[in-house]
Length: 520
Image (cartoon, rainbow, N blue to C red; front, side, top):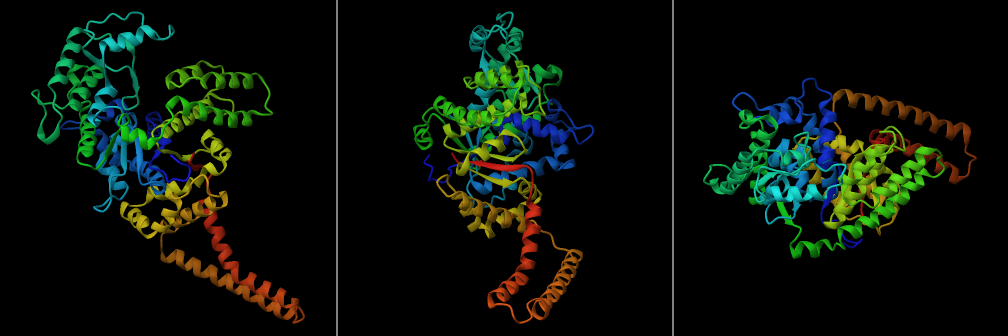
């Protein structure tokens, strides 16, 4: 993608499956008795756990709305990987209808969500993401690092039979290890393989000879593995429903699916290869990190820089996180911490993925002193920063108000979307402030009390300015001042109300957190 082109799509750091899980847990901590992820997907005659939670505590949807709307204003197409969709807490909890509603989609709008995967269809992406053959798991176990290799790779299933894919699943709040994937009984592998073979697509009422869709088979198999056979029917029923809803939404054209292996997608992305871009972003962001460490002394500095050097050569995220975990650095609340290294690696990895897929990366409401902000400040005109308070305003808007904002401020939005790295830094700031001002104005409320306070304040300011004007005419300047001084005094008195309004606006949108758009 050329630096002078507008973004084809944007990927959001907050929508990484682990980031979604962390954000979900942070919100859930504020409520007593909030269900854990493994209990969230229950649905039976007496329980609709996830739907009830979202209606009882609207903070979940409000936070998600603020994040996705902020990114949408910069680019109308949001790109997700299949993992971010099928293992993403917010996308699974809300479903496609609610997500499109949050964006204020109507008959005149095309789809905004693009899912990128490496399978012929979105349903096959779900199959590849959640299942694996026994043979492939066994081979991967034999090649694994000795520290994480299973004690035994013996398995009751045949090499061609299916098992659960070993992976950390954010939606379940658990990790399926290679030992677990190889440790089921023979009946488990036989039934899972046969059910998947006979399952239908769920399209136009077709559900195969077994009466099940693939999403239902996979969800119930996970339920049996995690909760036991006696609870397999209900414990993950809602998860199967959401998976199928997203698959059906893509078939209906409400969501787009892009196969990364298609020639057209490869040509549009213009990628030089994942490893090439990974090396470029490692070099760029490692330099920014070393600059932050300059002048620091102590054993933690050496350990931090050694670990940084090690993970710079690890394109596999699980390996990098394991290396960080084994370091002797403090966990967080410090510049030289494991959390800072994880932030650094997450940004490198996600920016590499976005560039590889032909998208731009955006970090919404990044915390103060996070590496997302550090990288944005070090990128010059290749990034733009927007106050994090804007995200809260957007999240609180009803969908009708957000749709109205998009229409009434379409010129401002178009100018912000047209920003590119070759545009001057000053021009970028002007356009970004204009965008923030439009959002703040759209979120303002009206009330008699506030209007009365405004009128009283305006009257007081007018009285003060009238006094100052009279004093300047009759006492201070006394008719003997030069013309230019009289003009300056009159000009200053005239713009004071506007300056006060400007100061009030700046104070209203200031925030220590920032949204960072990485344009290159």
